[in-house]
Length: 275
Ligand code: SAM
Image 1 (spheres, rainbow, N blue to C red):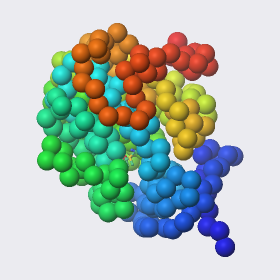
Image 2: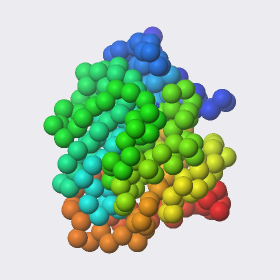
Image 3: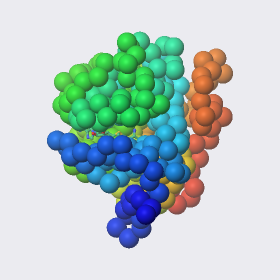
Image 4: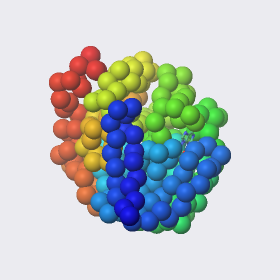
């Protein structure tokens, strides 16, 4: 008998993945957590029935959410990740030689523990001495740490439950205060194909706080519709006009310095959301 993981991408569209083995399934304090091994995408982390990251395509999301802000900042030394308990963002951040410290503020310790155990291909950088893992609410942490980070990355679940407050204007203004004078922030901000209103609202929230607000895209096979948006807020540096020629070359599979310049060029239906 075949075993299939059925993911409701939106209320009337589902994706199914043929499963080799369920490695762990538990109810944590915050969510239903599962790590399953699939034929098409290898091992994947699933939270509340939603695919978060997979061994086969994690690099797209983790490279784009980190390298765009980190290469836009002239000298990113201290980086905060809100969420990101699988370690994928930390893995990419630590490729930048300027980075001295990454703080990961993840609300659910079980995500860290189980990803360390079952997804070492993604989580290995969590053991790096430059990485400090804090278990707690990112909203509270940001509020209590002003003028503390050069880059803040919000690598969260979708805007409900514990993550609901991570997409609002108040949180973005607290991120602004948490950032140093040249600070840059980036977040995953949902799919404009299925949730155009949500993407527009989030963009407007970022724009109401940061002098520079930009939306950029990546194609992520395991995310609803594949069209995935990220939103960047910057106090001073424009990601489309930074000179990357003298910046370090790092090992990537998706991000390139050429892509850095063009990922902000949007399809018409998405550009219209930013008007
Ligand atoms: N990095 C993955 C990806 O490729 O999309 C998914 C993101 S990561 C698994 C999302 C994390 O955000 C979850 O582990 C969840 O527990 C965490 N999270 C949600 N709300 C949070 C909050 N308020 N503070 C800190 N972490 C939060």
